[in-house]
Length: 347
Image 1 (cartoon, helix red, strand yellow):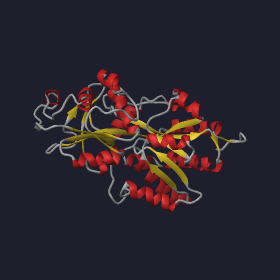
Image 2 (spheres, helix red, strand yellow):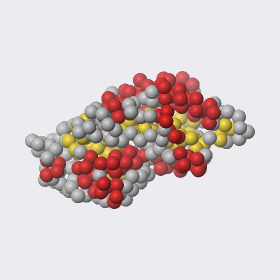
Image 3 (cartoon, rainbow, N blue to C red):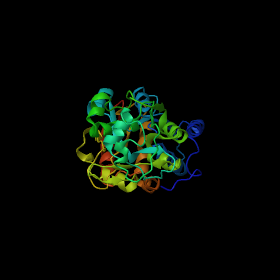
Image 4 (tube, rainbow, N blue to C red):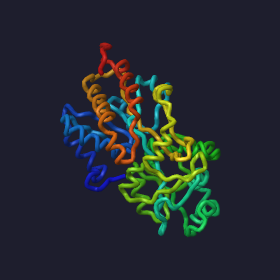
């Protein structure tokens, strides 16, 4: 990733305030996942320069985005937790993937460099279960022969808010740990067995940076922006891989969007020697019947533009663009799905 403080919005709070303050009647409103916020911010900047239409996006977590779109207080919601076809039907919603990225365990251990510490899914689950309490635990040392790890208590950091990043993380842990699946489970918000919690990807990043001997999980753009120490993970094929656009792309390669009802697709623990096991898509949620058809059309035009013109920026931020074959399928669905109250097509 090639990202600097100058070309990344300085702080999440300041960015949201800036976007909200500059919003006008023609702007798009959205709310939800913090996972894709960095790329939405860059796309918004470029789109406004070209069209004059801005994006007022509240980066409040996937749970908040789902609530706001259901309440119709925004033009679109964003969630890294895909809704099932049944959930979509219940609320008259349609979802489509906007981008693919990676959730990354990060640590703050003196002397440990990015990618140096290796963890398996089972060990990561036991750390978050509170079963593995110290960094020099035999289970960790067995994966890291010759690495000097301290006899210090592990500070476990998790998300406090309803989060698609948490959904991806706990989905993975549920696949690699029977105990995790049975005792904690998979959701956007869970009862954490150990540690401390912070709000948003930015909150977890801040807590890990401030807490010596800590571990947290955040979206990769925040890892790079905050110059954090990421962990190498053992994937389904038994290979230790590091997070980047190649390993995210390898995991996403097997996605069968065409045959996924409601575009419901989860990309954790995918096979492949180069696959990053904590890969996930971020989704856009909209009502099929648009009370404000012009606003709905503006949202679709924005994401159509992003699909066609935003790939380079996405890759620069280590996200994986949705393949053209899939975006064509998505846009064809828009034409028949979104209608105004009179039944007229919106897009």
